[in-house]
Length: 384
Image (cartoon, rainbow, N blue to C red; front, side, top):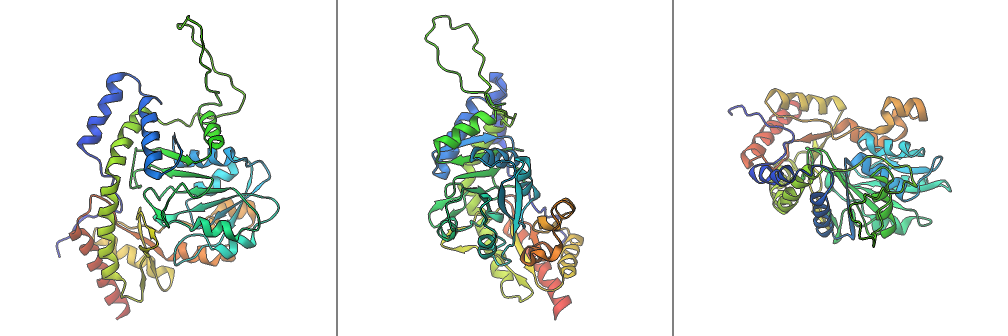
């Protein structure tokens, strides 16, 4: 088989995005403006929420979301361990304490039983992560909680994902999306906060812009006088630019096509790989719509088997990487919070045995068949 080079991920951008950039460049308004406002309105409609607020990244979005719902220094916030470090770091930015929760290797999402065991009187919020595009059943979580607790959806990977007819970012109190280049919809960098709460929306809009309160309309005829905003809150510069929003609006129009293409490619993966006992493929069908930001398999056996497969695929031009890390195994969290690797065995298994294989909208079916061929070849060499 002729060697191919297949990227793990690649943004799908082209002439339409390039053409959209001309609008803000020609207008001379490059920072947050009318493009951002349009992008917010269009995104809110697509996710079936009342409000969408564009921000500079999902990380800054998580920070603002936690502040908006009232997380304070000393509070405890429950966070799944198997996630990118920014999910837990955002809690620290608020002065609160991230309480790490174990994960289920069959879904890569939070383990409900462990989360319920860690709810205390100090728990002020729960962050659920819809990892790789599979939504947590937020409604089931709400029913199981001993008391109402605000829920933040880390939907960084989950644009277009649905759970029981509810869109990601609409099930909890507030949600956060990422537009990093590895995500299905990209603006280069950037993010979006979604909520059905007027209160949380207003708070986020103030906090993302240095804490500036919205200007009140003036009845004065002297329209040339510039009114300065009031600053009653400590805020941040977490704005998105009109340049990024112009790209995002085009990407949002393409989203249904992106999701359909990814599902077709993922179906090939699952059909080819699901019969091997050494490989556990993700569940992509059920009473949910998996957005398939990544296609992450679990390699049975020792972690070195996962790394052996990764190396074998790399030699043959196929890029891979671990699904993500387990936060409780990282040095900062072990030295500051006393975690050890074995504290959360499910998350540890996810971190040491998961492998993201290529899935993006620049791939062909032949690319997927190429990846499958070499996974099958590795299995036959190591487990026959």
